[in-house]
Length: 398
Ligand SMILES: [Zn+2]
Image (cartoon, rainbow, N blue to C red):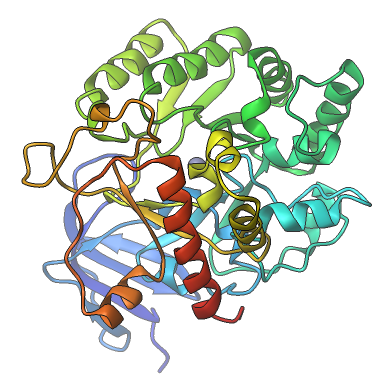
């Protein structure tokens, strides 16, 4: 006799995803779907999974990821599925793999190569991109990136768009939203998105509102000017009546520790005024990004051409460096105030490449260094040595 159910998840604490308190019970699954939920389900023939002492919940939604870079080569997404994630929202921080206009594909490839050197970039509309995206184990909701739109229309131009260029960006945005993009993402911290001023973002977000889509922003500053940057995001919500999600909200750097309460108060006050503003944060104290975001123009200007070309070549080859915030404070022995060197490029998190642990292990050194203030020149020198090591140790693309 065949089983009534295929699987019984027995004795777990069941959460239904509505926010209601968990209840102990069983879940029966048949043909890949939940067939019954109850305090006690008896079926002697089903495969039983003992969930005693465990929580059973609907799949988690990871609302802020860059898995559009990895899902095409790893559609099983086991690193997510094994954490219980069943839906991801991708295309954040202004970066999306589409649209890619004819003649601009190499530009986009170069721009995203640090994050996704393995992707086969080709000219595509957003609609064709979605249609050709492989079937994946997780549901994927797509955003279209403002940096990508700007790159397609204006390249890396550091200026406001002409009205024709703004129209062209709006046309690309509309095509993406028509195709099913859930919204627009921005990366106002990173060029060329950082060249956009408020009027450009308002013009684009008015289109987003027309489609009842969302605006997901990596704000312009997550450090010393985080309050102003949050203000800017709230102003977009106010001007466009659009849903604004401030992604991976943080107050980065020791000077800004303690500002989180003010930032959250600002968001709460905006919500009380009827604005649709939310935020999210990642649940860990470290981050990584591409190294170019740490290099300011003046650092390049004070760097020798040879050093600059090595750094540039590394960017072109897709070398990504990680930056880890040190869980330390100024009162720690060895810690110095960055303010003691006024002309210096200040850093409170010690930057190190992703291969740093391996390198340190080889050198027999594993102790973290104190946070330091370093000059642009010494930063560039240090970066050069990391980059050379990173090039030497760079794993081949899968
Ligand atoms: Zn971001």
